Image 1: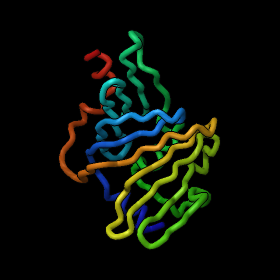
Image 2: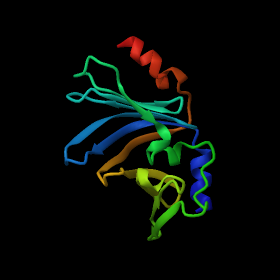
Image 3: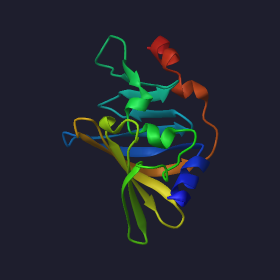
Image 4: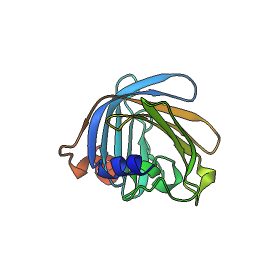
Length: 172
């Protein structure tokens, strides 16, 4: 677990394509931007065109079909917060609830031990080098959303503005 925690803690920025399998079986694609700690942005391609972002401890879902405010909730109420934390420590007591490795990939299932009612995240990593390739978030109702990472570039510069919920609201 230490090697995977170290990998996640070293992952400062990343950008790439993703494919998402939704709980109802539909598939969306888009571009993902990650800036640790605490920030991620999913830009969905048409026909979806939604934007989901986390910044400032909040998650906001911008739905172009809605003229109203984005749906917002605290980041710490989603299992995705585990990989966005400033200091990921998968060795923390009761955080890892499942672990499997076959030499080429490692599957880690983790939850926030202080808030297990918010669900869990299963992360799949390649073995050598360690790299995050996929995750499955299971929410409090056990609905599962899978994100498969495609062309994924780690490092580089991403503007903090990409994760500014207020600025996105003003832009819309």
